[in-house]
Image (cartoon, rainbow, N blue to C red; front, side, top):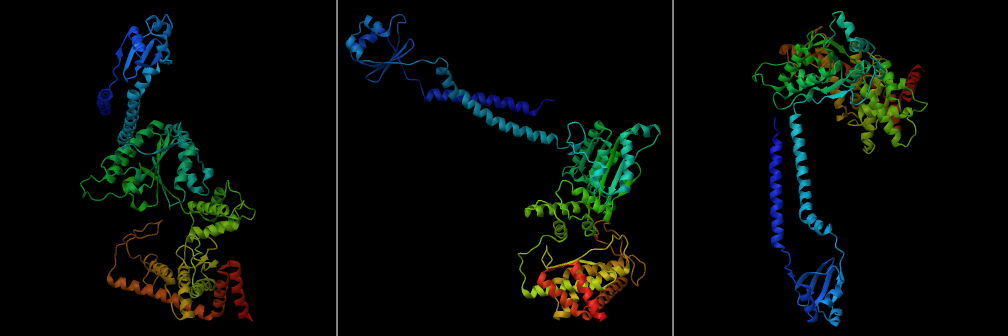
Length: 617
């Protein structure tokens, strides 16, 4: 196929030649060469005797004669005799000859013609060539991008010439069951004939399901590293474009490239961006995302039995995936990756501490205890923030305090010490946080308090950091009620001490209300019975609800509202009773906060012990 650019190059070349021809003609027309008269040596001798000659320029055998009237003439000298002798032989008077100025010029035979050629032809041609080369280069880049538009933008690791960034299971902390499940995949990629001889069919697709940052991508790369096979990595959003058919073409291109590298792995991150449930054909079947999904289903179903390609995909929204993706023969296995527990968090911290100078006081167990619910990405961020903080303070090592401060920074945001509160606001914040901490300390099922601070972080004017003593996968009704009581502790403390309330507890009230409603609607822990109200269409990992439809009557809705109100009122009364009975210790905690701004767990526990000792006395 003839390239459309070849004709363009030919036409432009002709235009350039015409342009140069016109330029040369224009130059010679506007700057004609000066007219020079040819004379003989006899005439030159006569003119010298007549006193008409001003000077003579000698260049080899050429003589250029300049007359006193401004005219010029040209003649040739006799190469045998010297110039002066030749002129004397032709009749020149010696006295007149001495009055004429003679200058000798060494003629450069090359530059005499090359210089004008460079200035008039070659230099303009060179400048035009550079100009059009830049234009054509941009045109070729645009054309290449146009032809590559339907190619999959997948990154290839592990093949010859590809970047060598090998990751193994040793680089993935925890996840013992998940890694054991994937070892079969690794063994198949290393020894595919062992399974094919037995007629076994290895899973074509493995779906990794888990919350953001829990290590799905890292685990997929570890499978490729352990197998030592090429690894194609691409995001689901890279398939979708505004033009219909581009996504499906990229899917075909990806699988065609993978077949040339087999055995290999294909990893599709964020599968839900192209794998959502297909709806009714309102658009006539031309919706780009659905066309991409259909092509993915076809490619996975079209694998031959001896194809040594395994597709790994990751998502945190398994509830929205199309059922056709999850049927046997496509994504045969689903591996759920949970957030790490305390032991796994400690192992993850050990991995992220590699290459960092650590102080002897580093206690990763304490850091793991203070980070429940943190994902692997969060823990990596904690260590990175600690290293940045140590470097900022010109320290040579990362100390334990840097890690503890970075935990709070990741949770709540950076400190806002420039935000100066008035004495009144500082006192209100101190009593608010003291209320949270006091109710938490006096409630048996509440989580223990680690730290109290009235230093602003992020959107919070102050905070009470509570950390569970152990990881929990199940929660009781009493624990939920205790959490609501602690959330209302700040609001009640403000009301008891100042006889007024502020907007500082708005976020606490929102969380308490949502939790109380979940107790009634989601967990069946109210007097309405073990019933779930509303269809469960919430994300199991993001813990958000997206337009939960109502499947209950208005009367039941009123009953739900009354149950929620009852839970909130009961927690408020219990928090009010605790704070009123312990107003002296509340004031002591608040005063300490106003003076020191921060109270650690040890000091807070000492304040609570003083209360218990006074009660005994």
